[in-house]
Amino acid sequence: MKENYFIFFSNCIPVYGVEYTAICDFQNGKIHHFDSNLKELIQLIDSRISLKQLENRYIEEKDGLANFLHYFYEKGIGMYTNEVESFPRLPIQWDHPSKVTNAILDFGIETDYSVKSILDELDYFRCKHIQLRFFEVIPLQILHDVLSVFKESDVLSIDLIFNDDIPLFELKKLYLVTSKINSVTIFNAKEDQIVGNLPFLISYLNRKISNEKSCGLITKEHLSTGLHLFMESHFHNNCLNRKISIDKDGNVKNCPSMNWDYGRVQTGNLKEKILQALNHEVTQIKKSEIEVCRECEFRMVCTDCRAYLEKPSDMYSKPLKCGYNPKTGIWEEWSTNPIKKDAIGFYALKHII
Image (tube, rainbow, N blue to C red; front, side, top):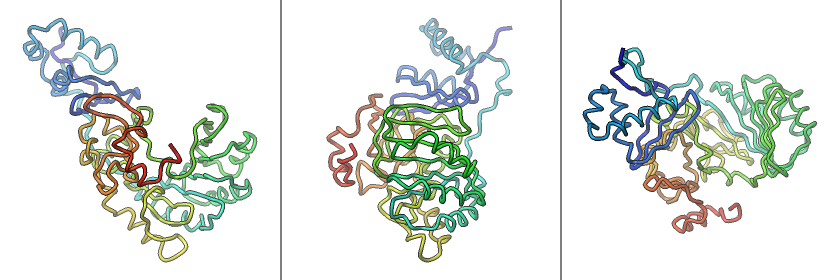
């Protein structure tokens, strides 16, 4: 029996930009990119019209239509069917049981805030995932002391970031302190290397990272095929919503790179400061509201950055460290773009470029 419809799988969702289209395949972790010539066809397939209607629309291009449908089929993007109603679309919705989904804690040589007091409050907000970043060389005993505090917390996973090459045998010892370690990333390593035969993943990266100003980079490699991020991006700022950070000086922030804070951990009511951060309007700035991003086909799979902006005075400005142009479909080096020169100076980023 001949099928009357060709539809995209529910896990393959198109996002339309001003010129290009991205079909996000969340089951296979792929992003398929198409130029403007296919935008109308993808929209028609997405509307779930019949094959007969499609063929009538492309009556003079039947061979081309058949080729593209075969391509979509071979790539696992769509299928032929007579039972469209049996394949409902994924509902666009997002929520999370935690008031704080994850937190970042930065450490320096002179960091003196109480990790335990922070964890006590984060447990209240049901925060289960924490990233610890050490941009300076920290004595291993201090690191062990920090990790030991997590034994009694409700945190489920810890991601560690270091700026110096720690011997593998020392990293293995960390797991003996707490089994909650999920991953370790080491920058400034001699070469890129992945160690995956341990209870946690270790990534050695031959890339320089100096401090929190190294954050906010947006490249093709940073695009995410996580359904959670895709859904959250429709309703909130996917980089700041329900996120909390403590910088190395103990200041409560939405992000360590932000130029404002809500006061220090050591003074006043920490719970109130966290609530202030969670309720700040910046956490609700969506990609669909941001200049340039709102025209981009990658806007739902790209982590946003409100700390470094192309126009520092405009909170709705394009992320400074993004070099993609949705009108041309070209990725360029962001740091050499003359349009960004003033903003690079404003944020004092020259030394990390």
